Image 1 (cartoon, helix red, strand yellow):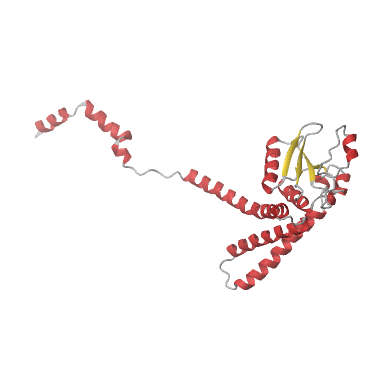
Image 2 (cartoon, helix red, strand yellow):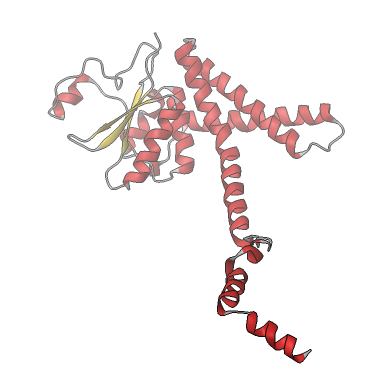
Length: 250
């Protein structure tokens, strides 16, 4: 019996031992072990996804307000105030949907609809009223800019007011001009400038400060306004600024 055990041990070569070690370290035996979940990475991914989702839900009503108003103004030639009313309606509807999702377990849906419509309409209308009337001195280059703020197209006013919520350092440098202003700046008179009062009765252009701001912020600002439907142009000549305009409806 002892001899048979010794013979069996002798029959195990170094090659066999190496093979067994290989299986233990990363071979077929190791492959049978279930992969360990990477909890930290999964939680980080969930947190990032959640934050992006919440951010998107917050931004959507503001974006819908401006984008709808611009679309109605340019596509259907509605005047600025009527187009803004259409944007308000679209925003109220999306907010009501939010309310119904949050309070989906409420039994009295009719009462919930009445309350949500009324509260959302007051909130959105109040926000727009504030935007078309007031420009903070923090967001204006001078008192002169603030004085001509109401000469600007109402949709553009609400858009700027909305943008200041995300970019509190936004500065409006110029709104209304007359041909003589170009002579004072040493520039050729631009006969088609949207800084002039247009047939709509409003100025359709505004200049925003870009000097002294990080280029990433300028990039985000420009493309965000583009997505809302405005025309943008970066001027780097006499004074670095971002020119924003709403085209004149045909």
